[in-house]
Length: 174
Image 1: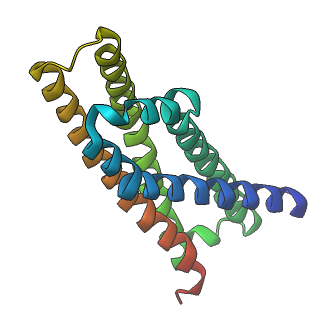
Image 2 (image 1 turned 180 degrees about the vertical axis):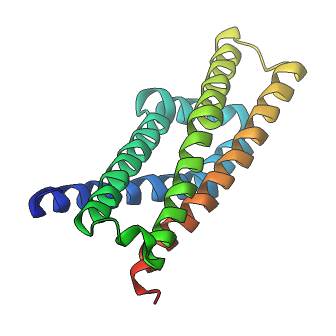
């Protein structure tokens, strides 16, 4: 079992990293990516700054990893401190469902979102470097990647919304 001080540290890590993860994904899904994709190649410098320089995708994924690890530590501690009784509670089952949703969201972020962002950045850099307008093939490739990313990031946002909601209300469900 963890000391009370360590429980506080892990709760803070879980809540603050989770807030950043969900908030960043939600803002990206609702505002940043739709605006950037509507602007097309003109948004390339902004997206390059956001992705390559500021490393937003890696920061979001890192916060997701911290959130999930801290959550597992807290779940384990609650289980250990109650002799295994807590995992049978309704609250623990709701939190467990939220944890599963978070794991699915993290998996999508790692296997779909991050590689797709890297492909978009690569194609955008290629278009900028050629010094001529993008070809029809390049534009079609870019639009396809953007559509894939938008679908995946919206799914992740919904999963994280549901996970956050489950964590927020679990202890209040009788």
